[in-house]
Image (cartoon, rainbow, N blue to C red; front, side, top):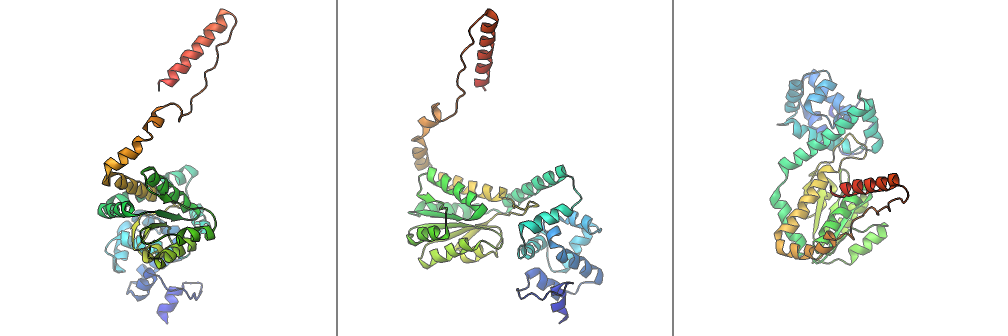
Length: 329
């Protein structure tokens, strides 16, 4: 009973939701009173702490970084990064754009500081992707793309931008790829014409959007291979797709961060082009003339030189030279 109260928190809200992994660890731990108070404070204010480094978290709770690390280890985590992962999973069970922005507004930062912090978090996400990405899995995904007849990339809401980017890149390489937009019914109809020789790539993060997850389930019923792009090993996309890759979207921005997922999608496109480079070059060669010609690119129209006295003529010549100088860049 004491453990149940510990997980409920101070407000006594007896939620029927299953406790998160971090809550279970906390309830079963034998922490000292001071460490228990520290973890309780972090859990109660998870929206303010899930994106902090160990040093930032120590500063937030007026302890040193070593205390944070030792407390995390007392919970059974080998590294702070493992604790941070579980803290984020705990956070996403209640995450909304409002809670993210509300947490950010409570920080004592100037607007330029908020901007710099956002960029720093993006860089950190890229660093994590760089160190953890399994290149062989990216190559295997590219091979699946090459073997597929049609490729449907599903991304809903803001993730639609990622889906469109990947589909466009694959289409450029000659694949029959599509990122459908529109109603849920339109998406379902697209899935209903897929077969086992086709391929579905689903992109969603955190709790994952219902339409995206249901697209995966619908495709699997038709024996269509599925692959997920998500931000954790326990998201619905990770659990229901045949295989998946992870890129963090963690950010102090209420919109999240798609910097790391975009880098991951770029790696998929690169792998897809290099598995059969001659094929890719042949396809891109068809548009080479268009890229080299001036028809594809905007050109500033030439302005006629003003007629009149010598002064006007010289001004016209000067402007023309200045224009040619700009064109040389």
